[in-house]
Length: 140
Image (cartoon, rainbow, N blue to C red):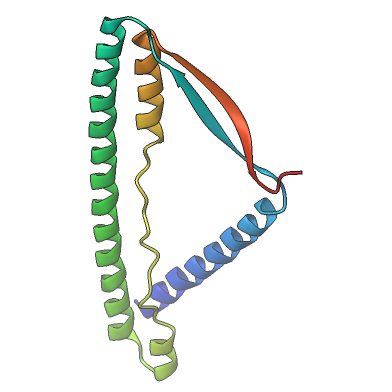
């Protein structure tokens, strides 16, 4: 069991190193973000339709936040169990020092699908959605 835990932690350490290297490489060039401009429909029915789009967007975002919160809780529970198992199976102080009590359970809600559905709803209500790429860092 201790051998499995050591392999697990070694893999996590390597993954963290690869991710850090990837972030460093990405940080060298310009970073762009897509922004959207919304032009509402002029008729009352279209504007009423947009209210339904907003309600749908809020429900979707709330659901995504709830999922992320549940995933964070599950991650924290798994990290606690992994740490307890590591400590319980460690035979030496060196083995115990290799057990990590820290975890990366910072799962953020993925609302990209919600936003995509909102833009589609907005268009279906007669509104216009224009997208453009904006440089947010490393710009010349």
